[in-house]
Length: 260
Image (tube, rainbow, N blue to C red; front, side, top):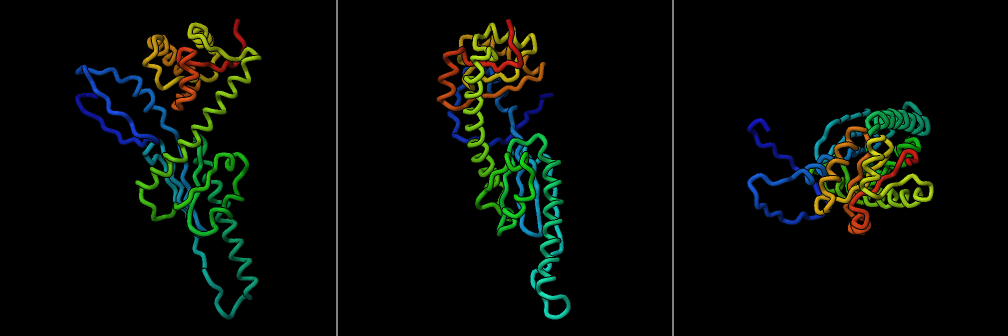
């Protein structure tokens, strides 16, 4: 771009095969399209007095927040009673967790996953402060602490995101099959393209192998049109789902409303 080479580091859930290029200007748009589908993940590392919230897009940290309180660890002799001290300490922790939960709510608006970890019981106590919308996105992470290396963090995110996306795609295909009887789906490319032009498509499900299909150019047109109308584009990577999509020219569509 502008005479400069831009290099980006990405994480993948599986090893990629070697690609042999036979042209000085290889056509890499299919790969480029998939790389643009970086997913936002919120990583929360927490104990009873410290919290670090990091928002990842792909392998990049795009937002970060750190919160901390001064928490006395032990009751000293004299002054307030042991019971009063423990109640005051627990109240302070509770208020801190409420503050962190509010920050997580603000930062997780467009995040698909919230990964929660940290030493001790802080993470489970904090989880109870989250509302139902946040807990539905939340996954507990083993082996995460404030000293976890960025390399290990990337591996944690890749693993959990892969498992989440795998389940998400299975549910999406099930949703498609459930809507067939209601006439809220399309599977022929010409029908899908017409539905896109009418802004009737809610979700476009595309095989990552779409570039090998004879309908390749038509699928490219559909992808470009889908972006213009803010239609959700979901790339399927599971071999099982890809095999199903191959029967239907690599694309399926879930519709917002019936079309004639």
